[in-house]
Image 1 (cartoon, rainbow, N blue to C red):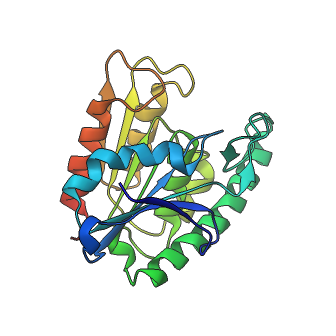
Image 2 (cartoon, one colour):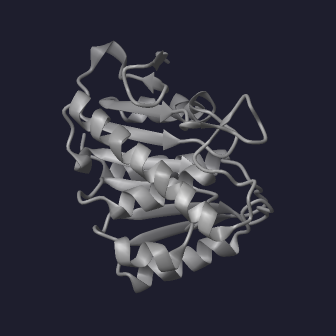
Length: 224
């Protein structure tokens, strides 16, 4: 795996390029969870890159240092229980990520329909928001162990019908699994195609079953 840190983008990014100088025809942007970093979530690409040979994987560090883990990063602060504060901070992160994705699109000469946005936990939350509020439709959205930040806020801001896969562990105590069911109901009511997978005996992490299901979904959706 060729993984490098690049500062040419708005966010410090771990980038895994196609092997053998294959032409880049698609991109997967992977957003880490609270307190993590791009290198952490880039481990997903160890298997994925073998089946997505013309895909570049971009795993950015969030724009803020984590408030409870200074060696990691956060898309928004979770150390404050004020829901309005959380919403406003998440929208600041949306602005950052929208600019970042525009940079990626321009740099690799890719349409948004050639880009998948994916994330774990807090990264999943951001993927859902940026994926559905964009003027342009993405190839797909893949979320692991996450939830919708604020349904009342998101509903009127939806601008596209990007297909979604959400995966959750049945024993998740960090982000309870009922969030998956609530999100599924929300997306169905908003006429957005949603697939879900609840994994038995799984807590707050991404097991091989989840990784494989996500890969198969991305392979069907992404333009290669």
